Image (tube, rainbow, N blue to C red):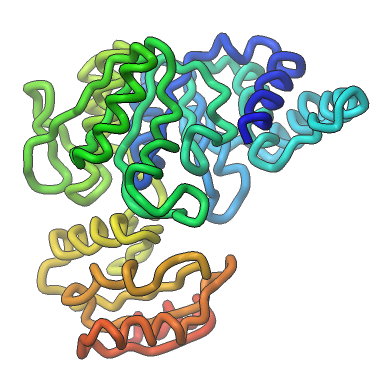
Length: 371
C-alpha cells in the first residue's frame, strides 16, 4: 500500500500539475473526522475558496468532492474525470501498469484537478481508512488533525489501540503541526513518539465540559449548529486550525459554526425523525449521549442496520437504557442479517422490545407508527 501512495503522488505530479500549491489540512481519526472536516471547511470558506474531500457518500458520489461545501456538479465531475484523470491514466498505464488507479485514487485525483480548475486555495482532506497507508497520505499539509483513536476496522488496522494509533499517526509530517483532542495515554504515547521523530509540534486541544451546542474556547463563547457534546471536541479542533494556522477571524468562525450542519449527524430530516451514521461503539456512545441530552423524556424508537463487518454486541451496548424500542433492519450495503442483531441485543439482557423489518424504508415507517 505504501507503493500505491507513491504511485498516486507521481500520478498527481504528472497529470495534475499544480496540485501541491493548494494548502491542505489532513484529517484522520476513528470518529469525528467528517464533522471536524466539515466545520473547518465551513470556516475556511468564509475567506477562501475551499475544497473538501470526505468519504463515504450517503446517496451520490458527488458528495465526496465539494467546493465551499457544495457538491461537484455532474457535468464538472464527468468533464474532470474524462479530460484530466482518465485520459492521463490511459497514457501512463502504457508506460507502467501500476498507474491503473483504484476508486479512492480516482476520487482524490479528480478532486485536486477540479479544485485547481475552480481556483481552490485551501482544501480539507479526510482520510478514508487509517492514515499511514491511506491514499490521501500523498499530501504535505499545512496542518494535520487526529480527532481520536478507538476500535473500528480492526480487521484492517489492528486489534489494539496502539496498533490503530500507529496507522492514524502516519499523517504526521516533518515539521507540520498536529492537533488532537485524544486523552488516552496509550494513544498519546504513539502520537508523541511519531511527532518527536518528525519534529512536528503536537498540540493536545483541551475542551472544558459543557452542554452540547455551545463551546467556551479561546476565551470566547461559540454556538454550534451540530448537536451533541462530542461535537464540541470536533469544533475545538477545527477552530484551532482555522484561527491559529489559517488565520480566519473569530467573527467569521462564529458565523460558520452557527450554521455548519453536516448531513446525518443527528440531523432532524422530518419532525421528530433524526438520522445519524454512528456505526462503531464510540460513535454510538456519543449518539446515545446526544439522544439523552436533546430528547429528554421523549419516547425514542431506534432504527438500526449494520454492515456484516461490525461487532453487533459492542455497537448495540450503548443503546441499553437509551432506546425505548428498536427496529432492526438490513443495511443496503453488505447488510448484516437483522436477526443476528436481534440475537445480539437479546444477549445484552434488556427488556426493551424489538422488531425485525428487512426493508429500511418499511422499518422507518414501522418505527414512526410505533412511536
